[in-house]
Amino acid sequence: MTRSPRVQRALRAAASTVALVAAWQVASLFFPHYLFPPVTAIVARTVDILIDPSLLIEVLATALRIFAGLAGAFLFGCLLALVIGRSPVIESYFTPVLGFLQGIPALSWVVIAIIWFHGIEFRILFIMVITTLPAFTFQILDSFRSMSKDLFEMTMSFRPRRLTLFRVLVVPTIVPGILTAWKVNLGNAARVVVVAELVGATGGVGYQLLRQQQLFDMAGAIAWTLQLVLFVLVVQQAIVAIETWALRYRPVSERAM
Amino acid sequence: MSTPVAAAEPLISFRDVTKTFARPDGGGELLAVDRLSFDIGKGEIVAVLGKTGCGKSTMFNLLAGLIEPTSGAVRVIGHDPFREFDFFRGRIGIVFQNDRLMPWRTALDNVLLGLQILDADRAEATTKATQWLARLGLTGHENDYPHALSGGMRQRVSIARAFAVEPEILLCDEPFSSLDEMTARDLRAEFVRLVRQNQKTAVFITHHINEALEIGDRILVFHRPARIAYEARLEPAARNGGRKDIEQRILEVLSVERPPE
Image 1 (cartoon, rainbow over the protein chains, first blue to last red):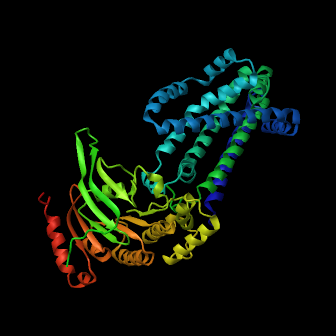
Image 2: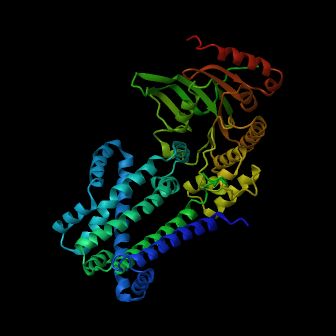
Image 3: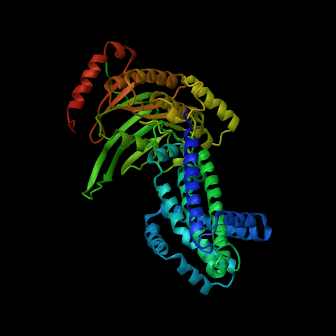
């Protein structure tokens, strides 16, 4: 019987996950539990976090920080990309700065933010925005630049107002780039937020990981990490669903690459 | 037979229009249009013929207001199409060489584009766009995306898009050159019928002599850089008996690299 490609993909993903879990369980039989706790212990801790509101709120706090940081970087990134895209002169001022910012490690921003700002939430927001801003800007700028000259001239032939041009041509052109930017930056943001919370927060998944490290609790560390992984996977799937709907016009070849 | 023509009330006029471009390698300027002058009257269908690279498309872009002349004056309905860009909202419809359909819009939404830009009522615009698709034989394909349509169907959608805004002037830049001969012939006939039925003025750029003879009331033959080397009016009789003479004359003109000053 021939299964659909979607089912086949799901089965392959399930098989590799089961293999990984089995390997961990085997390791737990041969190593001390503080290094490789049994899978059942990890699952129990993971479920505990999900059903205990006082713990779940820590996960939600981290999720909110990620969303706030990404939303801020996205808004600034869109504005910067549109400004830079309109003028090569402006581009020559901004691009080196963005390239410089992109080269600064997230941990350096954590230290800088702790020295500069007092409020914990503002520190984290600043770190999230500043670390994801260059990638958002460059990706949206690339999408803007890839706008078809033919379609631009065709649209201009109807003499649209600036806002109408933006709505009918610019937005649909940059949507694929925006969705890719969100997917890429979501993973980066999840990593950065943990570092920021680990060093400069009193709550959230990063802070909880720091506590597990102090308690030498591997099951707890994995369980809190899994919360973040689950969050990223769920949001990634939501973005993929939006992408599938927004880019439904794209032809799909029957032959896979 | 061919006769020189000067339109009585020009809807479109070029007066000593020159257009130069800077060469990409920085080596001076490229002369694309050289002191070009002509008039086109209301209701005329004028075919502009010339070899590839003779400046037809540059003339087209000047006429569409997409580029500005280096010197001289372009007037369309008494206005400058580049400087008074917004005046021409809804007055000029363009059919390009390739269909230039937005891939994210269905056939119907592509036809609706111009009407949306003109802030037309959504319901009325949809009715009008659907009717234009029907007139061009695309009933049943309203909700198809461009990738699902053939080249001929896509070009029909682009013609519908240009006609739907009911422009006074239609500009066509070799719109059927990428299609097979049978499809191109059908679309040409359909295009001429629609232009005459809707009493439009049309400028039709082509590098095919037969296409120019089939479509134009008048033919302007360009030399490189764009300048009129020969002009002929195609009276109904000329379409039959005199057609060979005009065709022969056009071939002679095109075989000369540059006409005498």
